[in-house]
Length: 93
Image (cartoon, rainbow, N blue to C red; front, side):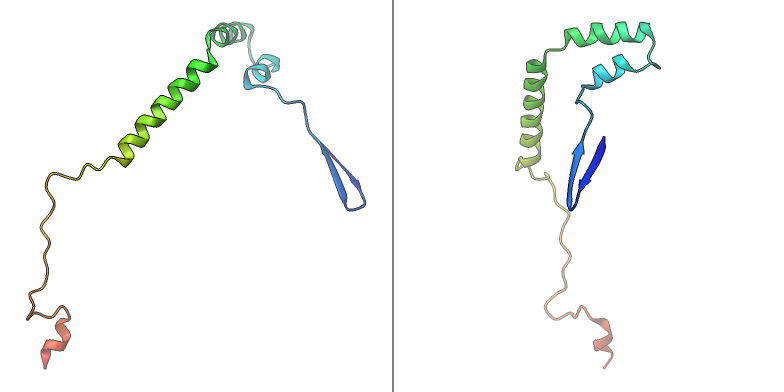
């Protein structure tokens, strides 16, 4: 990436976009065996199928999150009686 300034205007130039697979393939720290494994795995990936799986799981998650299932048993509410005060300091008089 580089920046060039022409007065107040700044022009930025970025590297050419690559996929993580291509970056790993070009990196010198990745061994030839690992590159072969990545290439085999990459060739079997179907992007459309992956997208459909993501959409199905997202739909399922939304259905679970928005379900109106209430707990089967709620804890009983404890409230003060009409003649009881919740502020105990005012009862001292």
